Length: 436
Image 1 (cartoon, rainbow, N blue to C red):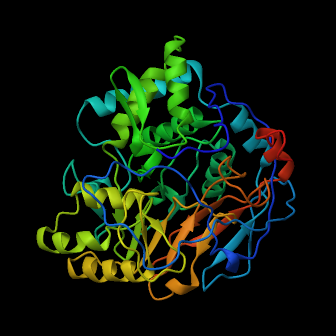
Image 2: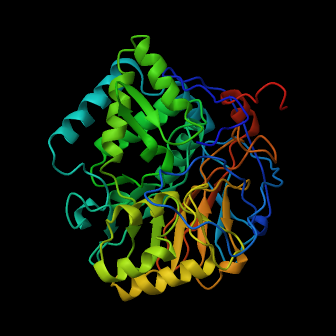
């Protein structure tokens, strides 16, 4: 496992609220993505090494903005990026967001959430996730949403990494934007590690799943999938893994529910989807697509739940400029280029799952969303719902503008940039000493 240079943040079950942020950035510069030196999954076989192009440089650039605290939600159009529709959200009820962060699930409330989901998973039946009714069976983790889906609002929330502030802002904006009973929320994974409120974020999302049956789903991220309980301890195949450390420390200290929560997370993500295929050609996954070395077997078997296929949905990274990348799963989860994606779109369409574009997370970008000009033929949109710079991010300002996205039929999802006041970000997440 590759190690980080900065010390991991500690996840706290009691929640600590302080922070603020703002940043305005030119969406067209979103081609730069920060490097994430984490390990990939254990390779099942020797991987061919090498690449068709030079690797993407580390990235993150500029961001600055001003936001007014207000009690009403409003959106304003921002400069478009490669035809992408981008709206700025500046006026939410920030006092309500602050209060939600200061009062996360804890104590008996947390235990009730854990017990309810334990009971649901133990039953062996449906979990109650959005789009679960379209799964081919209980083992299907590459779900094809049928044409008969009653069209409604669908919202996407990117990588959170324990960012409860960004999560609460996102949920308030989604709630205020309407959509009714048919609205759905899809989380793109990586709920924990690298963030202060890991347990709180997980519990909040579990509660949403329980209280809104068939309205919320989580596409597993690499950090989610990597967590396991083996030989009496929590373990992770990825770094940073500070949430795993927290689970072990709290369990050894006699925490009333940390061990149950960790085991529940591992059980939950063994059953969540790795990819969603929308009927209009949108593919949604945390990471990437089955790489080209799997295409022949996939064409022959049509087995979308082949473990190698599912793993690539979770772990692969998109290269901003490369035409092709040679599969190399021994480093950073491997990368794919625009022609690799085009080849997959052609294959998936031929196999009865039309794909023309993609929404993903995984790669952390400074502006918290990215579209790559070179990918115009088959575009991919990357989003992160992160309000501040993570310890592993080297460049750019501390405060960031988290992003959510709204499904638009036949197009890339519409981006909503949530301009959390900078003082609120720093109140909730003070910048580490020496970095200010």
